[in-house]
Length: 108
Length: 116
Image (cartoon, rainbow over all chains, first blue to last red; front, side, top):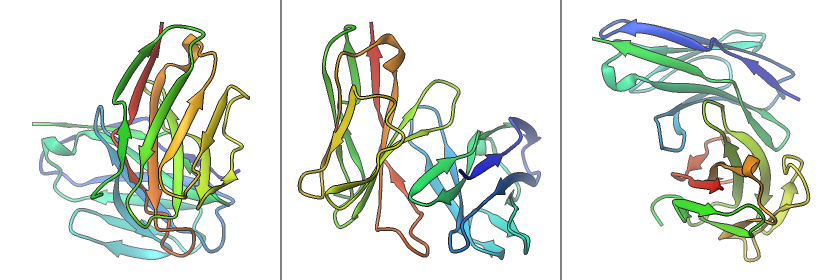
């Protein structure tokens, strides 16, 4: 089974850059690493996905080293509305397993 | 539809009762997932459908849980003889399919089940 490990929680202040790292082993060769964001009383929402190296979109960047045993989600200049739980998701055959999640709290 | 729709949004039932939770995925999405999320925990995988068939049901906790997707679209999660430990939010997600870049799941808002 693919397993992921993330910090349980992180604190930040508005305007700062936040980096959340996920460790994962036994990731399948052809599968991607995906990060999701979840607010209370909502389902998780897709943030970003990558396979190797670096991916950037309008909300985040994702860094994946060559060995793919970890990935780092980078949120530039966070705001209060970024307070949420962030999950790292890797594929284990057809069973997509969520990590433990990192609870990010952004303070003014 | 535009998103994944789950009904009911809230369900309160008594211990021992039968419950059905419905998921209407995004049109054209062949893959459908059910997850269960308890307070403060990450979503726990239950079952995955590819089309009409259950491709992986290894996450179903016991034989009281069953899910169907008879026409490859709407899915129903069925829980028999509910127990208080079944109380959780049941999340449904759909995606275009397996394969490169196919791990992008679109989730519904969930069905909150409370067993008294």
